[in-house]
Image 1 (cartoon, rainbow, N blue to C red):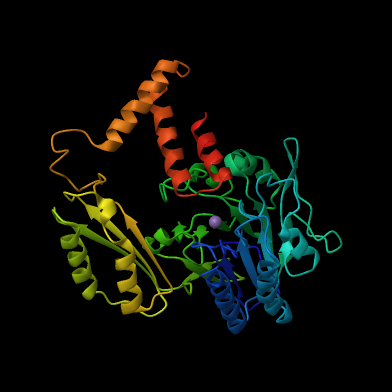
Image 2: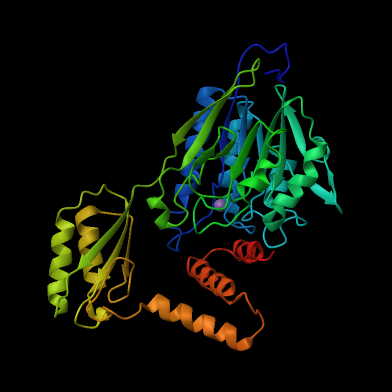
Amino acid sequence: MDKKIDRCRCSKVHFVHCADIHIGTDRFGEGVTERDFTDSFNHVVEFAIQQKVDFFLIAGDLFNKSRITPLHLSDAEEGLGILKRHGIPVIAIEGNHDNSPSYIERESWLSYLSTKQYLKLLKIRFNGQIPILKPWDDVDSIGAYVDINGIRIYGAGYLGATTGRRLELIKPYIEKDRFNIFILHSGLTGVLPEFGGATKEEIEVVKDVIDYMALGHIHQRYVLENWIFNPGSLENWRIEEAGYKEKGFFHVVIDPITGRIEPHFYQSKRRETHLKTILLPNFNAPKQATEYILNEIESWEIGKSSIIQLTLIGYVQFSPFVIEIEEIKDILYKRFSPIMVNVVNKLNESLPGVSSSRDKGSISREQIEKEEIKRIIQERGKFPGFEEQITEIVLRVKKMALAKEDNETILDVIHSFVP
Ligand SMILES: [Mn+2]
């Protein structure tokens, strides 16, 4: 392959690619595990310094919110400052969390960090249908691309439902004969049901001009065809993400002669987290249930200062609310010294794969809900022929709202259903 990086360079170019750091996430209130996100970021910073990488990419969501506290800003400045002192340039884009709700127009804290030379913020603005592809400019501290060690890095930020269309518009302006990295904060449909995003086809529009697609947004690692790379969030942004397969960051080595990409994936440093489920038999009395739970807990192996989330499922012959949740929590705190315990009581709720005597042969709660929503949509008569689809949207939005997804992400899902 006749590529692309300066011929004079003989040594390999290497960089770190991470995303979704979410500094400032407070999962339990009162800041109990807030610093986990900073710790995890600092761990990647440490790695980058040891490896003496040429540059450091952040593919969006450095912060959890567009409005951050002074502590979150100084946390970010500390990690970024270490990279700066070691002469490692940081190239970043804004994710949907850094800059909502009007994510393209407003100044974010990343623009501030860019002005202070902690990072180089890239974004591609549009003049109607025309992308403005200005090179990085030290005076304005903004640009659409920057060249480092012969590699060109473009950064587009979060484009939401317009991602596919905008990539099409950007493509003709990208210089083909270089080694190009493109940083984008976008999901990919089909990776995880709770994350919407662009389709593979929409991203592939730029495949023949981009060598390394550096994505962020989905909190689980995935790689497609040694071309699309998504590292996942560093920490578990929601506790349930402890169930995701992998999260971390890439250390990528590029051969300057052939343009060959050699990605190495590393798991991030995360707080030990245990998602536990106890299925209760059909007990008559709450005391039986509590004893059963305590007995189950006996066999667990859990390190100190962990997060424990215990979900109770199954059907009992008494009101599930009389179970002594506080007593169970106390036992867990005494036995394992966790930093946080969360008990989710889903007793007597219908779950897939768990049948109960009471709804055998009848339809599930989900089914009833779905039928009812569909009936209401049919009655209103606004979407003839699309009742099934609209019902799916309503159910999905409800699920996302319960999972406390931010408004922009929910809006995106709604948009993704609109042709
Ligand atoms: Mn994120």
